[in-house]
Length: 209
Image 1 (cartoon, rainbow, N blue to C red):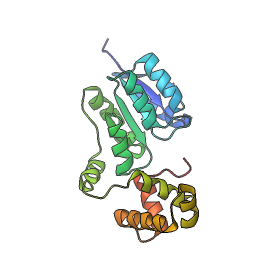
Image 2 (image 1 turned 45 degrees about the vertical axis):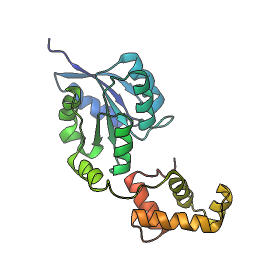
Image 3 (image 1 turned 180 degrees about the horizontal axis):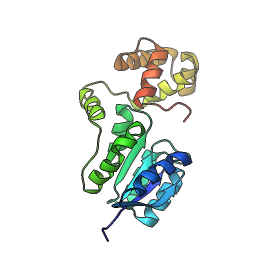
Image 4 (image 1 turned 135 degrees about the horizontal axis):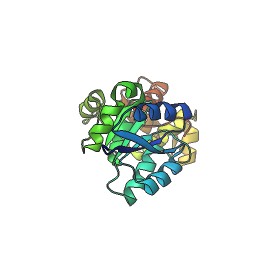
């Protein structure tokens, strides 16, 4: 009997896990060996079962996919993790790859690309969609937001005025205005709302997290 690629599916949506499982089980060369519905379960299942490939959703309760990936690889360096996400954006892709993910795949492409990507990652390749790879490379020279700027932008996204943000961070309102101007310049945003929208779409911030 041909050896099967053993796959762990980690996603908090039951229908998504079921759909992915059906696609995998339809192939003679791979099978689902475990499922997880949150990031904590994903870590525990991966380290217990040691699958050949872990399909890791980025947005899950208890522990997000990037932190789960980091935790797994800190214990099992040879784990092969393919990150799945609904949202495109170079910041998310870059964080996933920096965490050690072997691949990054949009859920919109699952039907056409999932099985081939699993095989590629299992064979030792890295899997990054061409459009995301192009976006990362084409923006390498863009100014990256500092940690403080990301923090300020999250507070802006929550609807806080500059004065309140300054009070919370222990700095002057003028300092926050300077941060906001820098953020808008780096993101090429028209205004504060546009900056928040661009940051969310690219994965720099996650609203509600």
